[in-house]
Length: 437
Image (cartoon, rainbow, N blue to C red; front, top):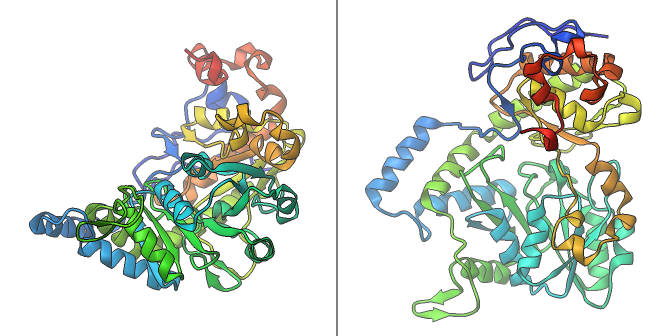
């Protein structure tokens, strides 16, 4: 097995690995120098088309139209709707507000079923509307909501389902549509990860009654901060567009409860600029995912989330499952080893929503019916990708992980490390987070 990092090569943003690593003590967790001088992080923003965006910014300033449905917002909505092949697109200030508006416009109330293995905003958007989230387990292969477990959670208080296209891989849309239709439930999708993905050859965006996208800074196409709701239902679109602007339906007329969910012109201009660079951004993500697959190939206990089959994907998440029994190291320990090298990973999604408040206090035994969610919450690790990293850096990251797994017994928590392998400068970085000062 490969146990030597490649020679230093230039990072896309100017950061390069400091040296090769061939021995246990070369690892930063064991006293060596970090492989990278600057941190490589998950979700570092992509910033395409700088000159185009700055020109648009000047136009916004000259026009003095900063918000309230200006020309860039209208163009962003039109371009996004055309790309997603949907009839209506309502841009909003962020995806959380988008979920809240969609849930209220659909008339969801009582209980709504969703996966626990998702970002907390999916649950909070419902709870904020005084809707009770009911957590369903996920499939071990797809990490998406398990339709086979969903129907048993339906009660007389259930009014809807929220599916989540995790990592950009669409959930079992047809199965959820069948359940929703048979049981008379509303169905919408959290598509925050899924811009550019397809299901049965159709772009995600037109399924269910509504889908909600995120254009947060960490997404591969970003609007600094933003979101969008898409639908093919004209009446629903009209209501959501009004709800985005305080519920106003005409001059001096308010038709229903609304909020201030508008996207600004600056965010729309950034979103439009990023959308124009989408093919190049996806190509970069795909290149990086392939590089990780090559770098981690053959390593026992590490499973890279795959994007198989004929569908389109955006490849914006590189997610590992770490099986401690096979790898010899836990997910958390591997994350500490990488952090010491200035590779900052993310433990998506730990803990599951059911272990966060207020849901934990409300249903303290939820974990008993969520075994796959519990397993994944202890195993998944997201790795850096996007335009801030390239194949050479990924090769170094892969070789660090190979070296770590080769020396797994010696890289158990600090107390088990040979003292000769630990310098005082590294003791703090190697300690579990709760022991750091």
